[in-house]
Length: 343
Image (cartoon, rainbow, N blue to C red; front, side):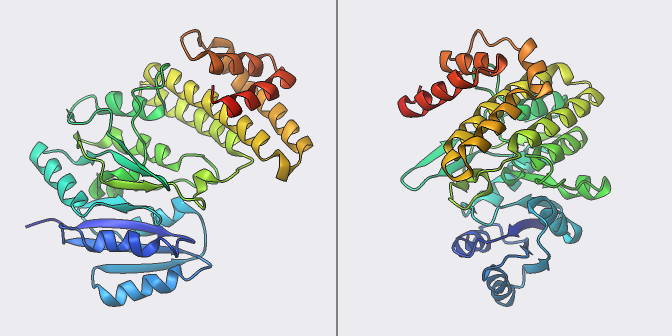
């Protein structure tokens, strides 16, 4: 008999997407589901729509809570999840109708307790498939060595990166509950998923990676990842320090450090780009002050001092040089040229 699988869906201001999301879950070919919709204090009609689904389908449970963010909404779902396995779907995304069946079947076939998969990025005018870089592989030993470094960031060439989102993974609820694993707030760390991953994967007995892309990650204008966030860089620095400590405790710092540094530098460049992009609305002086604050960050400068970037794209290398030497005038000009010409 198929085992119960819990699907946790945090809901916040997704009224125009929620039917697409929940319908894709209800219509799964795998039927033994516990569907937990967590209304995170959504100010629109999302909570009402959740209640309607609960009346229509006995598998649906609804939690209404005060707004606390994505991580804490997921925690509320975990507190009542009773499935053998658990996965997460964001309220503005959706899944193919055989997503759960495929993941569960592959996990049973490979005798593992965790199944990862790829995803499809959905834009307004196109869809782009992203296979997991370890697609087709099964790991039953040295799991933390194979998985966690790849989640920390890409290599120097921008490759060999595993999407760390828990939305594309079928996880062992036994591991989660027995070790009381929960999410930190995304308001404190820029990636609450990765912090969770560092706790979960060292406890896994086996990980299989499915060669599908049936999770549809939607590029919505209201998404947290598309909005300006003034503390994005500082949040990344906090995450870097936390994961360096965790990787030391797991004896994989040598595998993770350079990738974590790659990510910090990439986020520094991206944060500077956003400051200049939103200078019109936030104010030029504020943008310039924020860029200076980023460039002067001690942790970033320490990373830059030991970072070998001779083998990366010239445009990125030039920006790194200007950040390292805090040349704000040329940095602004270069960033604008990069945006205009796509270099």
